[in-house]
Structures are given as C-alpha cells and as structure tokens.
Amino acid sequence: MTNLDIAEVARRSGLPASTLRYYEEKGLIASVGRAGLRRQFDPGVLPRLALIALGRTAGFSLDEIALMFAPDGSPRIDRAVLAAKADELDATIGRLTVLRDSLRHAAACPAPTHVECPTFRRIIRAAEAGELAAGDHPPAGGRPRR
Image (cartoon, rainbow, N blue to C red; front, side, top):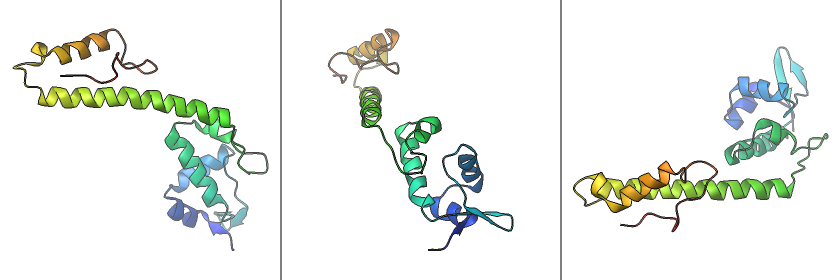
C-alpha cells in the first residue's frame, strides 16, 4: 500500500493535521518522509492512531500512551497498568452513577422542596463529607433511596 499524506491521515483518523504534527513531535507517531511540504505516513499509522484514541478515551495521558509502544512502534501494553486504569474507571462510574441517580431523584422527588426530602439531605451530607469527590467511594448503599 502506498504512503498517505497528512491530509489523508487526518481525514481517515478524524484528527486535525495539527494534532498529527503534535503527536509526531511527542514521538507517538512518525512520518516516513515528505512529498513537497506534506508529511507522508505509512498506512500503519491509522491503527496506531486508533490505539492512541482508545488510550485517551480511557483517560491515559499522552506520556502514558507513549510508554505503551516499544521502540519499534509495536504495542507493549502493561496489563497491570490496564487493570489499574480499569479500577479507576470503576470508581468513576460508581461516583457518576450515584450522581446521576441523585439528580434524577431530585428532579422527580415528590417532597414539596428539596430540603424536605430525606434522600436529598443525605446526598448533601455525603457531598459535605467529600464522599462524592473524585477518588472516594459513593455513600454507603451506593445509590440514593427515596
């Protein structure tokens, strides 16, 4: 397969050319040359960009992602790092689930005001105690009750 110029890589990956140049500057991808002023990339850059996008979506920094590639460009992903990130995501999902359920309850609560709702008061106490902050666990019971 022939090399792809930066505009084609941008089109296929959905990334702006400026991001591709930045990734190249960070050592995440490498061009194979130029045609005129346009950078040229091996078609193998597309799966690599997909892995980078997946890592970014999972919350990895670009520096962490860079460590997931061997010097020859092949993936070299530490399973313990993946497990730790999965644990972080589980904690975030737990907090967001509590927050979502709390918002749904507050929106539909039959109490005349939120301050009269025992569930809403419990949510506020949990927030005051920092139990809904990043890195902490949701309040006991996991989900607010009516």
